[in-house]
Length: 129
Image 1 (cartoon, rainbow, N blue to C red):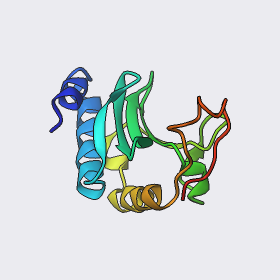
Image 2: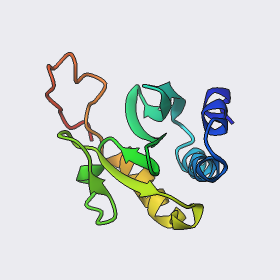
Image 3: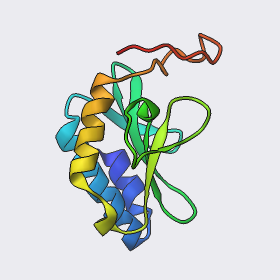
């Protein structure tokens, strides 16, 4: 396990750590070519420098965020923010549907908006794939 991400997971309560660890394993098994690191204080996976997926501890749950998720056409992903991100939230490990996440990760590879250059483009997103 990525040591930074392992340290992040270990800071969580037992229940949240279980959720984070489960998400970590699904992500690394299905997004093997991605670079992972702690970015803006939580685990994020990147393809060619572009953020694809990450998770974070919120007040009441763990959020799984897909930066281009609003373009995935998935009912279980909820829109997040004013760009193209979408999320799923978990309060227990048994809420995690591995097949859903695998499908979302596949779409994350195939459908990408250019977050890497969003600052350079003054907040304008362009579709990469």
